[in-house]
Image 1 (cartoon, rainbow, N blue to C red):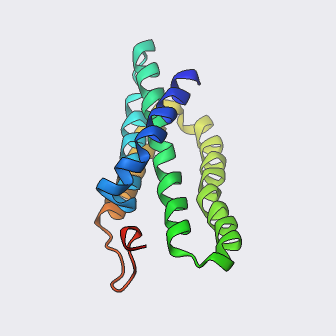
Image 2: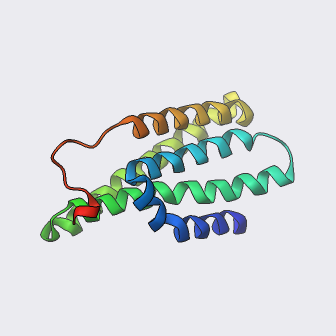
Length: 145
């Protein structure tokens, strides 16, 4: 957990630059992709791999949260910000709860090691869709704010 926390600190320090350089969607997609690769590689039974993947997971997960909540702040009118932020938090964290429940149900019959590459593939697909999705026309960008 300490190494994962260190990865999160590094992601936090680089987040402002990365969001400006990549944009929120690509920053989130990069975080999901990093998390996916770390999950897949974590199947290797080595301590060094576990530490490296913990750092990568720690760096990848905050990217999604930072991008999503930054978008909420940039796109939401001030009077609605509290309600929209609360709803966004629920929508961002609900898949984690569902994923934990599914993982708990599947780990006994399937085993952990076969599940990791499947989870990684689903996450990489999510990252690819997010990276390929374009912003709706006519929306203001954070740099125009």
